[in-house]
Image (tube, rainbow, N blue to C red):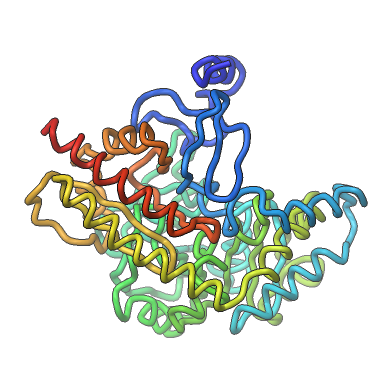
Length: 426
């Protein structure tokens, strides 16, 4: 059956034909390809077409798809049982591996998704401080909990509006929104500041010098907790994640993606003293039947224990070089492009030639470039050349350990051709 046939079947039984809106082709047009398998840096669809994949499950696949070590760990764990509702050695081993790698992190609790991790961390912050208000940044995505689905304005600490139908005004009444890369002035009503230390859900926006340090100082000044949402950056930008990379230590961390080796997982953590506030030791309730799932913890442990600091250094070097060459290739084809990088994370901004733009520093600047409308055409030109990018202008490119120099060369060549094809229509 074709991609169109599978998607038609999906639309009949799944809302919009997808189980997550980011998989939809609504913003780029056309019909999504339906994946049947993946291997390393590639995926194959139901029609047998192989794509060089820079989606990598939106960052979950650090080693690439179906890595033998991960598959072996999952297989061994599955033969012993898939879920127990009781403590297991695997969750202890993975927790030990995580806290060992992250300076300042002493304890973690596992959940089943990044959304759940952030939701739980915010509840913990509120419970620990006795305060209600939280502050997030415009353009940062922290999962689909009601109080975090806020369309932020440009003002510092501006009260947001619901970012989704079905979110009542009361749910976001205590959520403040500030522009990214601007340190807000807090007061003692704020329980926590929630931030992506590297913004990777408005395309890629790097923190400017002093931003994260300023947040740390401002939180300390008023007694608020600083939460790093490292669902994307955690164990992708380096051994110790963004906290190690930036030298700024938050009070709470949120993790996901990489720590599950491709299986559903999330975790939040901080100091032992702060985590004592959680039930059963403390008054902040949080629970989950599948939390610490033995398959997910086995897969995550296989990833973390199999990657060295040297591996990260090699990945970052390849990704940074790839980003520079990708930008040059697109510009040589006739479009303006900017490909910022942080560690192995790459942004991709496109605009008409002679646009006179630069790398964005906040959501409004990122959105202005996305509204040039060139990404959909570029996306399909790349897809037709066997290179799969995320079907949306606000996502980043994920280079995995499985992407070789040949893979990256192929993508650069395709980008030059795709840019020329799009530029010819302007």
